[in-house]
Length: 334
Image (cartoon, rainbow, N blue to C red):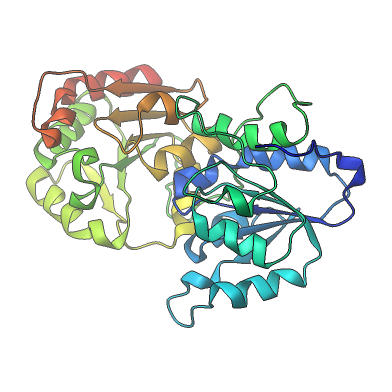
């Protein structure tokens, strides 16, 4: 429950944003951060990000990024130890974008005066502003709503998602080459993974309809084996394809996506990176971790292919999207 509308002019200390742990969710917080910049142009905004997300957000020099070392792979910090670090930052106002109890406790023990987050997971006693979560709201709306609601609904429009991109050294600069990124996921993505037999057929279809294409496979190290099997099944030396799965840092992957002509991707982090970078993309949407209506990018330069078949096996739902569907969507975008 909201106890007091926050007057931006009365805030003397710094501002804090705690990001969710997944790439797409974190990027979808960027509009809420832009709202805070507009409300507090003279204030320092700190952003707590999981270590793997730091390279994405540290490019914005208007923010101070704090690595959440509670999740460090080498020397993890305790919750109380991290709270003690935050106490030294003169933070008066915190927006908790992740709906966990631990984040509310962190801000409570850091003695931050105003602590804003949704009433989830029994954490309301540790928050000063805890509106009820409407799960029908889009994720971007949810994050922006926390900022707007706490300030008495002063704002009226959601900004675009935003990330900073550099030109990638992995991308061919030949103007006659179409660089098409591919992210089909791996078995780690479960029902979101686009199966290799369909993926290879889609690549062949796209290559048949367009010349001078350089396909670039992206993904994390856990998906390397799946990507190698895909290339083995593709078995076509005439198709130019580079396998960068597990070979790049997250910053390099960011720049690869931002330097593409087009991305073909499942519903996952790379999709949201492309949306924020303004890169056209085809979204292959099977059974996601959230309803598509709540995660669909708020952009116009993409074509979503949403499975709507009759399969009872969850892993087969995405098979409703055919290679012809993907090839046709690619042709429309390029």
